[in-house]
Length: 192
Image (cartoon, rainbow, N blue to C red; front, side, top):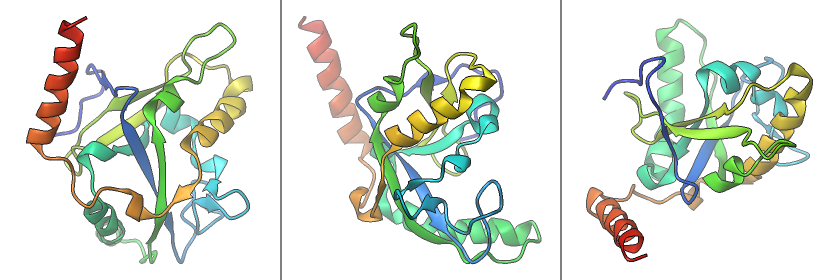
């Protein structure tokens, strides 16, 4: 499974799905601005707003995991994977610790709209070599620089507060379970 090439069509994640953002603490500054060793603001128990970068929302994508395809086991293994990647790049160990997850329903993100009623953010399924569950948040429309902070705060609020990693399923849903869910949706649509 390879990463989705730039410019390729991306599939929107359904509003009914839950997504999570893994949040870390480390022994060295790990935030985008390199000021904090912790991605979570201790006063609000929410992600530091500076962690939601314009570059992520306009180009790279703000990374999440689709919980139906993800597991607690994989989340707990992620700090070791991050340390291995740092080592391969010649960086000093950071001492990553998974603090928890931000867990939200995709509809909370998709329901953020501007003054005209246009959706501000979209959540896309972007499976890659590391995770079939990978997803990304991107701006849905061109956002003026003057409004970036406003929308970043709205997104932070939609992501919610830090939850223990135990809120994630111990194992991802099986293909059989996912196909059963899909068949139920199709059946419901056909019976309308």
